[in-house]
Image (cartoon, rainbow, N blue to C red; front, side):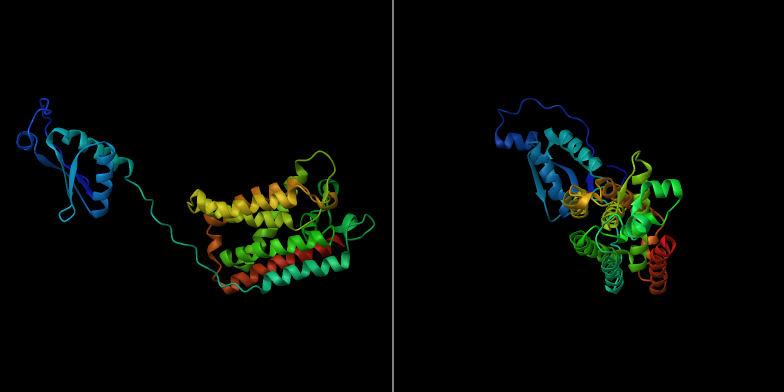
Length: 320
């Protein structure tokens, strides 16, 4: 008998030689080739073992009361070899269930506050035009202004500007849903600060890796960052592919809708792709550092949310 305890116990037997039993009567077969114990298992294991032997064409009997699995003596060596192989292949299956992340009872007011700020800002700035002090002169993502003149605040202020009303509405609707889902997962402060910092870094990579001058505006980079954070946390949590289908599907669908059409030439596919990629990295970091487990700490979330709002407000003060 094997030395390791298991729900399945496979017995060892000496190898025996049998002549061709094809001409035996049932009584002779029972005498010369009797039923012998091949394994013992719990009810679930017994069912699995029976399926293994059935797949190999090995006649067997299963006693559900005692958990015994019987096979003909002539096939016992093959049966036990197959059962041992099955046990080894499935030794660590199913994997241990990971505890579900705590659901944060986050109200929607922080998301409504910040999205309302986008609407108020658009009412003040109006749509994109080259003479607007809000866009080219102050807040739009301008690669030359950032890389050559050090105007870092554009990495953040560009997230709050929109080329036209349709651009704003699309980002507020989709972005509002994604932001609030992330708030429920991480807490409002962690979610919004992570989104903004990740999107700002994505904007930086998007212009740093370009050789030609580049301009863009829009909150959609932050939306893709939120989707990436979802996926990054899922992967770090040992999620299976099916658990990634929803956030990845949302990212691909949004990429097709917002990435291909570029709202007057002021948004771009690169920013969306970098937002998704940087979001994956942020999800990894949040999970590894356990920063995603602070959602229930109300004071911490208020401080982080205040930091996110101060970051945006400070960027615009610097811009003007």
